[in-house]
Length: 284
Image: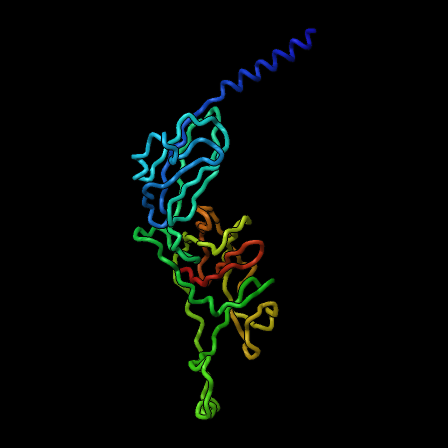
């Protein structure tokens, strides 16, 4: 009988503790990651809850003009909070509150759905500034070698034209012209860029910088895209790699940071071991 009373008492204490769980305030702001400016009138909500700015009884609609939101009396726990606006890409973040810390402040990011995939500068107040990848047409598809660039490519101004008799005679005596691999983009050691992925996937984005070295194509048989007469190419030195930090900002948008060693570098962005894109930089 005494044992049963003890069990009942423990159950009552557990119920009492559950009833004493705190609630708190979840507040924050929605920003454009490229400009740092507030997104006016976003829709913000917490998945699978009653909390959302679209609720007719939401009391802080005026502050939405400045991208601000606030949800009060939120039971402590784990939540997925999201932000959306017409013609903008979804922003979301997981949060957790506890009895000791029932309140939290959140910054959500969303950006225009017109931003194209690629690498972008950060801290540009006027809008997205893309780092054009003029090296991409020189890149080859590699496996074990990670990445490789052709040092030069033939230029054919008449590509696609149906040759006539005069064109055939001309081409016999015409020397092939070549376009050289563009020079690397000069930059400082502190890398801080945004990468917009072309598609949404659940596996993490991995960013790595490798020292770029010239080498023999024959030593990189796994790199597809070199012509039969090409002897040399630009490859990565896998023994000299620098892991970069990747942080989720919004759907398909990641911030890539790191300190790079001096010299020519090839930056590889990959998922599931497959290269998405490479860039050619020179750290001064």
